[in-house]
Length: 369
Image (cartoon, rainbow, N blue to C red):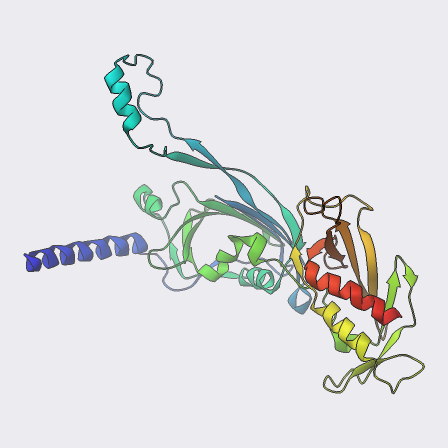
């Protein structure tokens, strides 16, 4: 008996693998190996727009090479569940039989099956991180693992391209191209993608598309500024635009192991209190970029302090730390603060760790005493 079961399972396994292979290969492609999918031209990519089943993402691109920067607006769509209609829902000819009613009431409750649709997305805007930059670079140009041409409707259905799972629009100096995105290939995260204008289908590596799924988490830059400490010749503290104390001077800044901060009138004396404070400022990270509904009203953020980073040619940037009252957690007897920070990179107030920010607020008072 066991031998028969083993034989049956073996036949089913071989049949399943054969079907999977037929889906992956569909038709023999006209071209084997890598195939050019998209070339942005010498001006590069300017915008990428992703519209998936569950999420949206727009990536605005500026600069090229090491100077390439991205700004992302992305979010997950609202999940909407509605009960599926069941037979008899509209049948008003129900029986008045008491025994039937009692028997029905005694049955355990069954959760209704639900239909799932996706509504509008809650969007957040933020600077793109290194993953966003690599995503743009992977499309400059984009090459496919395989290319398929003249596929029949059945093959397109197997690839998820009869009803695409998403669309990707790429704008560049060479023009604008729209791609339909289908299913992932069997046994991998590589994804089928079609250019509806040409009808060509491509199998694209997972690294070239997967960052677009969940972009609001995968593409967000947490660092508040791109200034590195060795670039700084000095730092000026202020509160609401008024300078507090003298500018600290960075001594030996090109030697990381021996550099330190000092007051200008005592350049040989290491200001360890300020050095520890600045180190924590530079480690501050964005935890949440607010949606439009979550953004504080203009002027609602109370500035705790600001740190201006100066270089050889002038100001390199400013980090401002602020706070707003957390209405949900505050009580009549205690105010709970939500801490936020803002820099040229973030373009807006973003939520930061309250524990770290409150420590910085306390340390700031020690630094300026």
